[in-house]
Length: 150
Length: 150
DNA sequence: TTATTTTTGTTGCAATTGCAATAATAATAG
DNA sequence: CTATTATTATTGCAATTGCAACAAAAATAA
Image 1 (cartoon, rainbow over the protein chains, first blue to last red):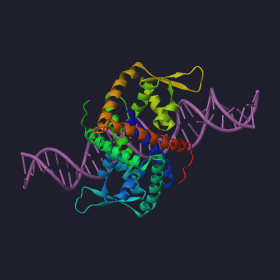
Image 2: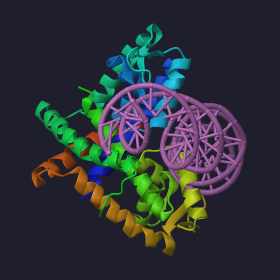
Image 3: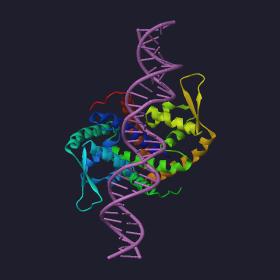
Image 4: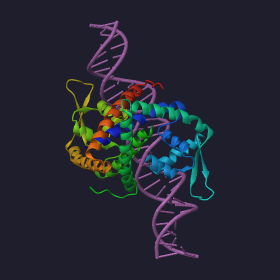
C-alpha cells in the first residue's frame, strides 16, 4: 500500500527540482525559495519555526537563512523582549522577488492539478492535510531522537 | 491554491528525514534506500531509468548507485546486447536488508494514512497518481533545458 | 553508408544538507 | 531563589546533490 508515499515523494522531488532550476533566474540557489516565501508570508517568524514548518533540519534552515541575509534578501532583527530569538523579515529586495516566486507557484499548481475538478482538488487538499498531521507528529519525535516501534 | 503542493513537500521531507534516520541502523546513508528498494523490486533496471523514476538528477543517481555497489549491496552487470547500459541487481547482502526497508515503509504508510478510510486511501492514491503524471511531464521538459511559459 | 542526434555513463567542482557539539538565554522544577 | 531542563542559534565536519563537461555507444536521419 505504500505507493502513496512514493507518489508523494516523486511529486515533491520533481516540483522542487523544477523550482530550483527556475529560481536561478532570480539568483536563488537550491532550496532558498522555501525559506524566502515563508518569511515573506509570516514576517517576524524565527528560524526554529521555519525549520519546523518546512520539515528540515534546524541547522539547514540556519544556513539557508544566513545566506538569504548575506544576499540582502532578508534581515534578522533581535527581539527586545527575548534575547534568544531573532525575528526574520524580508527586505525590499526580498519583497521584490516574492511575486515571481508566487507566479511560479501558481503555475506549478495549475500544472499539477490539471484535469482535477474543483471537488477533487478540495478532497485532495483535505486528505493531504490529514496525512501531513499524521506524519509531522512522528517526524518531531524521531527528530528528537525517539525511536518508532514497528 | 498552492497549499496542496506545500503539503506534499512537507510530507515528503518529513518521511524522507525519518527514513534516513532509521536506515542508518542498516548502514544506509542519506537517500540510498530509494535506489536500493527499486533495484530490489526491478532487477535489471538501469541507472537512467532509476533517476527518472525517483525524479532525481542523473548524476546523483550515478553516485548513489556507485556507492551501493562499493558497499556490496548491488552489482552492475554489462548487457551482452547493449554495451552502453549496465543492469543493476541486488546482491545477497542487498536482498538481506530489503525486508527491513519494506517493514519501515509499511509502518510509515500506516502512520501516514491513520484515520483514513479505505475509500479515502483509494481516492488519494488515484488523485496523486494523476498529479504525478501531470508533474512528471513538466519535470522531464525542464530537465532537458526547456523553459516553462507562464 | 555516413552523419547527426539521442541515450547512457562518468568525473570535476561548488554548493546544500544534516549530525555532533557548543553556547547562551528562557522556562520550569525543586 | 537556585538548579535543572528546554529552547534557540551557531559552527565544524563529512556527506549527498546537481550543473557542466566529457566520453562512448546506439538510434535515427540524410
